[in-house]
Length: 81
Length: 250
Image (cartoon, rainbow over all chains, first blue to last red; front, top):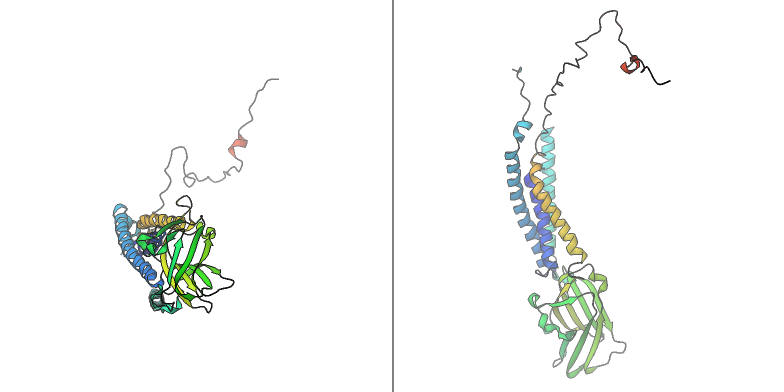
């Protein structure tokens, strides 16, 4: 699982949670089914996109700060062909 | 093998995508009559002409809370008295007064008062006392309430929607906001940590070649001090070779 997909998954959950939380603090009306589902879908999609972007950026920064490419490279055989 | 696994992963992803899109399409195409939402305000309902229906929540007319921005702020731990009043020139018969609270289009709670002997009258009132203590520790937020006047044959004579802003005990003790906060904090933490997951999509790092332990002059490796012929290695530990400490006060 890459950092981008992990960030997207976190973002989807966080977007849905934020929509429900906005209803809990009386900023959003989720009384009717269809607008409530639309709000949840919009929150999930926007959260997923934002989370994917943040996860991608965090993954890149982690790879830049840690020498992962060298550690994961196949071992070079000096006596090989 | 890798090709087969990749094809399987692609098939699983496609099936999940199709399933998700089907679920979304089904949710969006639910007809309005299958949801439990009550009819809207009684403009199109067959109530008697000239009859005025009013509903008051703790002496406040609920028609002033017909939008989310003007919702009544109530404490669900306190009891509320709702008065269903009607008056007019023609007689109507009201058998039930009903309150319904909606969430995602479905009634999460319903409170009904039934008249024992409903009689036709030009005016009247039905009091309804509601103490929603059972949901006070769970729910908080903005909810739509529908107050309905119901005739003996089940016909809704009049209904009115209004909004309540429910506050939790001590401000913020309801369970759902706390659970949502915990989920949100965990997700933010997981999102910040997600950079480390870049490692998981790659090959596992090969362990570095094992380096021999540093040689010290006191401890020579056993391969270099091979025993000579005829010399048998002593199996006894050196502690037993050392003589016991002599002396002692006698």
